Image (cartoon, rainbow, N blue to C red; front, side, top):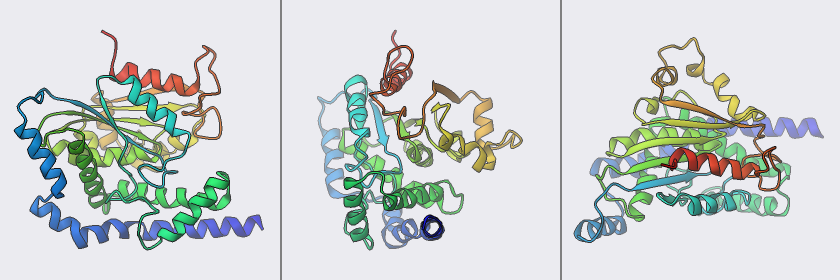
Length: 319
């Protein structure tokens, strides 16, 4: 029985990886290419941008934004695993100089959640109900498999540009919705948890091209040697010593191997643009993980509290 289930999951993973690029390619073929070439934006965003430009009372000084991108367990921008909710609220409360955004679903080029009206929407809605009843149900892993496949699309040199352009466009829409003036050199930190770390890197290339000052904060992310490392201001990678998933990035992506001296990763590392921040004996999930407010470290702080403190010390160091 267990063997059959493993074979089924393996087959589904292979199918997910083969079919994963089709969503972003379809978006590009049906609307993305035309919208990008024409420079079109939804009418409500144009109205917001025009209103900001016309309001002389608005402070023209560069603003700071932090965009939170969830991990592979998310179903939509507003439908993330419950353990992340208090953590994101802490980001809102603690980062006083930043506007924190959490309305972008990083595993779809058009920001549509899995339970939206899409071809497999009914399946994802059913799996979401299964997961609500039992978060550890074996079938719930299908959500993770689908989203991790999009992570590999993002990191792929062939399909990644289309995917990353789409997600960057959705992030830019969110920035405008929250007060960014298009063309302003605002500071943007893309905070990606788990799979969101790689997708943050992929989107950063295009956001920087819009004149934004972009940095990436990865929390337990599986990161590749993305070409965006040449453009971003800085990358901070926060990780736990007992988290094998984040560590797998330096094995799976050859550009992170020490012998690949000319890869974007190793060049950025030699230029001091990458800071590796060891948090302690963190696991990726289950318990003693990055969002664990119950377990405590030797200094008495919770695991999640230590992450929040670390993020605050990086982004808002005391003067």
